[in-house]
Image 1 (cartoon, rainbow, N blue to C red):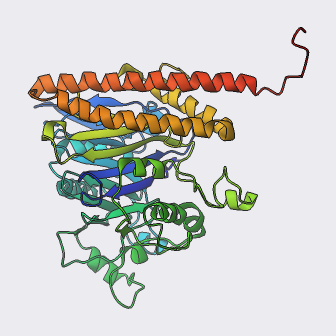
Image 2: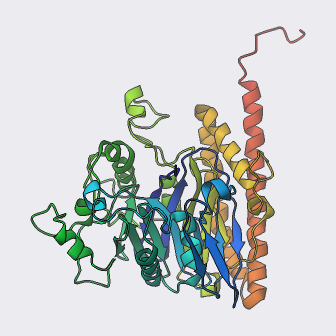
Image 3: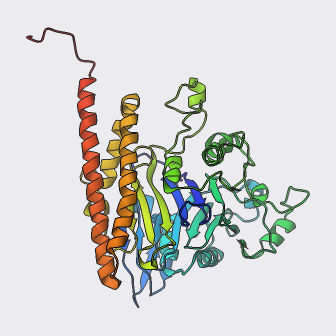
Length: 473
């Protein structure tokens, strides 16, 4: 049985962000709370053959001989849970994040069922990101692979470069639609078909699988009197959607558009909106780690027990990593790509900036064990989050102050590294950015240790095994 993931996606156009950058972001939520991951560099290849074989099904294929270097965040336990490289930015500053599990309805799947041994999410990034040259090219490249091999699951995929952001939804064995997010807009979704009206006369903003219009017409799949709404035709409107999926979209839009009143169970919440203000990296970070703060639905809040457990939070203990892939627009391309990686869960732990032009990652990130090991970043930050959550009323403000201070440091740190890169290029620049990334990791660990120690001391003092007594006894 495949253990499906259940993620949350946010995409921000370059004119919707505060600094003119494109940002695509996603929580990687897995079926089990303990799914160790590592952060590695897949090296470039030149004239070297490579074959990939899925651990989830019988899919396999030969890969092109020439490949770009890419960072990746794969599972440690390959043989039981597949590769899942998850996210990365290639050497041409093309970003890819995969996948958002997405579910087609039974009407459409009846006529184009999923392909059991097709290209699944565990092999998707490895088969695409090293070989593409733009976000638009990524959609086309993946679309050709789906046409050839089929898809064994509903998957949505994020692509971006410095100019464009594309969201691609593969919902049946061979059919998909991709939409470009307008530059002045953002989009948010979680585990259901999101794309709405498709304009087949506007290829600048829409791409689609060959024959999809004929497929829908032949099998009488369009329920609307007018228009061609991908969500209405291929999507679901189930009780699970109302309690597991649409509420996440509702809350993110509540954060970015507080002036708009919406029902958290509305199955037709818009996919794309213009935010009330320009969006920062910190806004995305908060949204990905959120749990309906300041609403009755917060599990840590003051609602009734039914309200506090009515909707699935956005940040979960099953969130193994969260990432924001950013391409800056105001610096040279060889230092413009940043992976903000939160390993272990985004509710209580930081998004650390890694310049993607690197040839290695810190040993604490790239050598994760399947067994508990505090030297590993994944285990370390996962444990840190568990301590904060276990004494939430006592520790949440300490954690908030810690994250705020690190965000201040990270913003200055990014500019400091960019300034220090002046005059450097090629291998010299890559070596420099690699070393600076590792210095950022070390500082983050040091600051985390301070708070960890404070929380442990406070925990000792909160023990219930105490009794008022004479100081001399």
